[in-house]
Image (cartoon, rainbow, N blue to C red; front, side, top):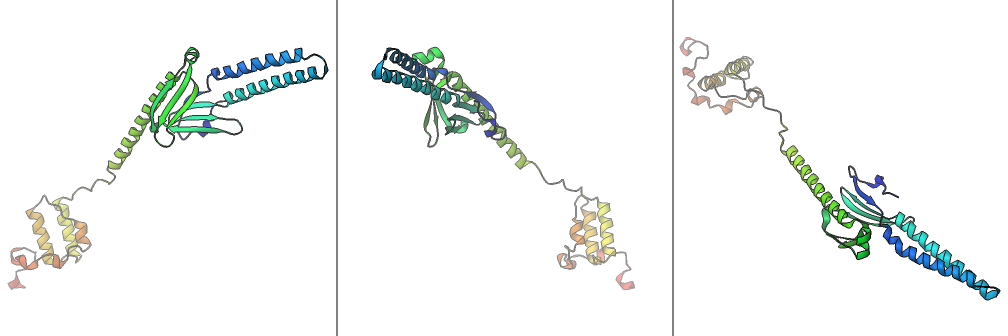
Length: 260
């Protein structure tokens, strides 16, 4: 029974999905063979009479218990999964009642394994995963190819860290990207003079204000005046010191004061 992929998160993918090594069944098989041999012996040796009948029944019960023990361990093997994904390590076991452990890859500190002689011969071993937090060191027995699993987990940890850095870089780039629209191009001096004349004719600018702004434009042609600020009344008569402007020196287009 493979791991249920519907339990994966988002774009999480399976890297390893395996059952324990069949070596875990060796002890159960030995028990079953021994119990079956004893049961067959008791059945055949029982003979006649009450004692023989009881002996035969003991042999039958012994064989049934041995087969039940084997069936239990087969079900346990079938329902046990050691899983490595792109985000975490998962260990699940059980058919009716389940238990399991999940270790995020970014919390794993150290991985090491242990193989006895028989385990080395059959290519399995015990895997130890040390993680930060309350879990501490978790031990997983009868893992197939523990060295290969160790290397795979380390590679998955590195890939997960690289994806995390890429997400951080993308977020930072989006945060510093310019979001404002570029400013509108500055008006030319001729356009600004035309707008000043229109504001003057509509009564938004007095003669003194018009003359002062016109002189400013002609003296500094490279400067830019915020025409929106003028049109909305941001420049008032109090904002311009009309006493500081020599109105007699500015040609406003009207007749001299003595000819009025």
